[in-house]
Length: 129
Image (cartoon, rainbow, N blue to C red; front, top):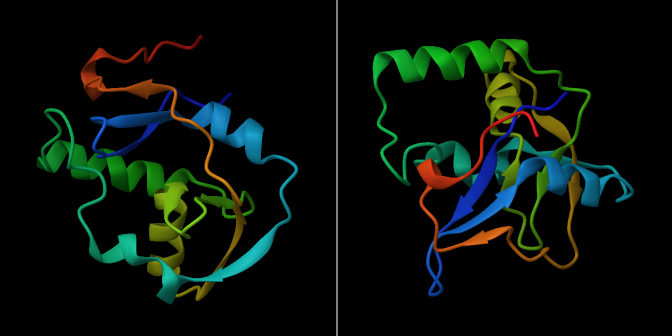
């Protein structure tokens, strides 16, 4: 079972949030393709600590390391229509650590509407439902 998590993006409408579980379902029938790690701009950006109260504490970094170690590279990452990562940064990081140059990916032709607009990450539901 996939844990509750969200993809965030700032916009003129406020903070946009997509439920990753819904992104996985919506992308299930998209064709799988290969994407070069060199094309993943997020590797050189602040990806996890831009929104809400998230700060890169040592404990938080260790949690991301644990998630990186546990991910399965057989699952494709999800890219938006512009090729930006919507889900899969822990897989991208694992590939970088292992020296893997390409990952399996799926890409939306048109981005789905966000699940939430203008809500802070701490206000979103993170339960199992």
